[in-house]
Image 1 (cartoon, rainbow, N blue to C red):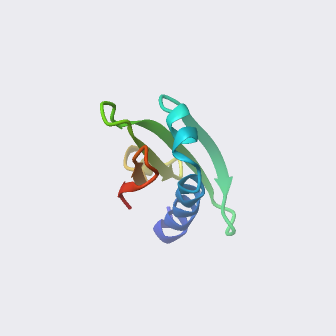
Image 2: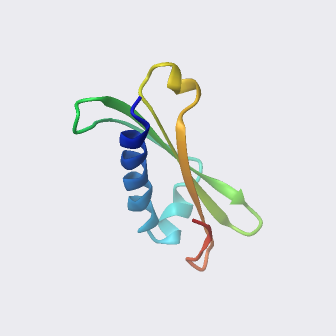
Image 3: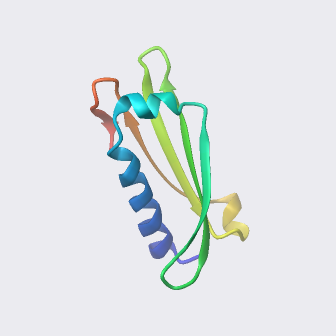
Length: 93
């Protein structure tokens, strides 16, 4: 797996979800989206985006993205995440 290429794809995907309002993300808690993407170099990658509570009592949502090439990296995917508070701010970026 080309880590630079995979990181770029994953970071773009995470940036897409960072634009979504908190309410949309909260409604997706418990849902996982998966898709296959083909890079500019023709390499196939499996993307997975998970939505779950980081802290259900405070209603913070974690969006966790992972990417791998279907090989042995599927056991150790590259990951990125962010945590959104109900007021729209981030716990971490």
